[in-house]
Image (cartoon, rainbow, N blue to C red; front, side):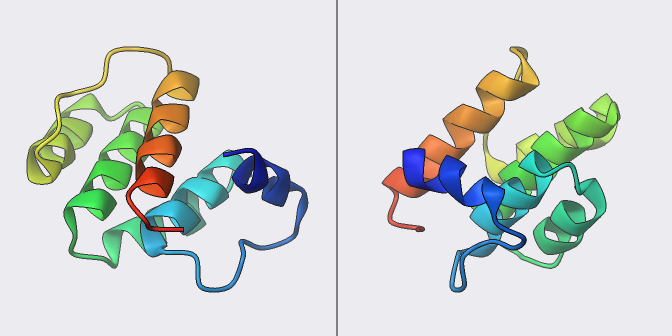
Length: 97
């Protein structure tokens, strides 16, 4: 997690970073559009989870709910920061780094 957060000082995510983590990287940098493009171009449960988070960031609860269902995840209710941390930690822990 520390390395991932430290990489946010760079201009782009690390080469070879899996799409869901790359999308979360761009989201942390404030580039919602790039993050969304990456998430929506993938057809995995992890990308659907990130897609849900991004629509939650956007304030579109209905669309977020759809993507949480696609990911098989409960709709998040905590802070966006807490959800981002939980997602990055889970994705890093599952060998997606």
